[in-house]
Length: 190
Image 1 (tube, rainbow, N blue to C red):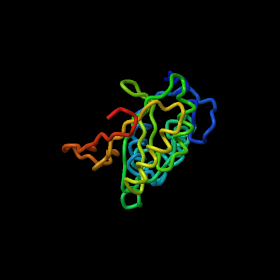
Image 2 (tube, rainbow, N blue to C red; image 1 turned 45 degrees about the vertical axis):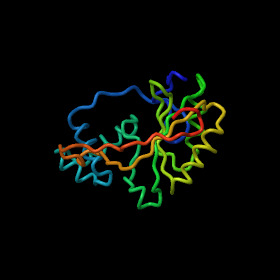
Image 3 (tube, one colour; image 1 turned 120 degrees about the vertical axis):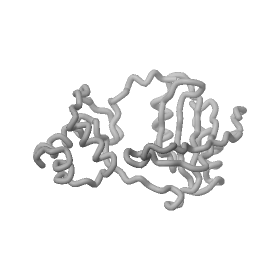
């Protein structure tokens, strides 16, 4: 497994580029991030009003947060089931030592791949995928994933239900996490 030393050097554009060292965030920066995490479509005027700064100051701060790589982008939260992706799973992978970058590139090309993480513990990679149905999910695991030479084994955890924990959506009550079900992937690991 790789050591992950390329942290921060990879941007969403696919290439690598120099990323400046992180600057400390002040209370206004943190408030701006909180607002934008709740509503990525918030206008500059709205953000400025809510953090009590000028529009020019809010605009400059947001641009600096983007340039510094603190804000990596803006996206929509999607209900995958309503979008035709009714089967979701977390898949753990054991990979060949020092093959993280190669494996990551191949995983990014998988249909429905939503999140990829290099982790420590009993496995090396955690992958979240969304697929139209269980048959498509099975095909993705048994045909696509296990065909990657650097993947030594996989374990699939079906997601029965999930709760979006974006800021502002969990009002202090109990948090319901997805309940996974281990499946046999043909890797010899349950």
